[in-house]
Image 1: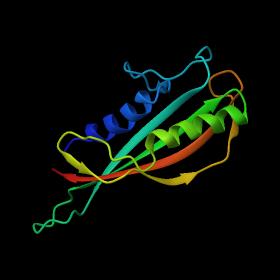
Image 2: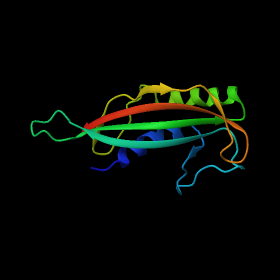
Image 3: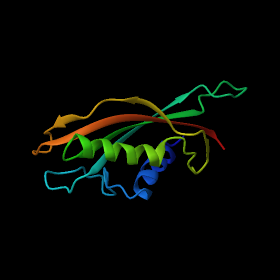
Image 4: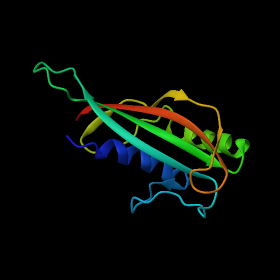
Length: 134
């Protein structure tokens, strides 16, 4: 089983919404000169026991930890709203998988972030995408 269909689904939906998304196509992250606002999305996938008679772990459960980054708290919240509009309740098209609608699992308030060498505000939200083979 490949994790790629889940990551592709999340990242494609964000990019299709016109957001600047990192890591970019080359796997690079934002720098101190990256234009604001932007989104950083980290996708992790696990496989849980699926509804199969052979007892196999076939249910893909992907989480996208999405950082909505702006020049201030308002910009971060607006970007997070665009992310929510792109992901929440969407049933993405996935190669070889039958997905459920994307759900929002957790959100944190905006906070100051200086990890790129400049002051920006980052709001973190966690989205979940589950799927079965199909």
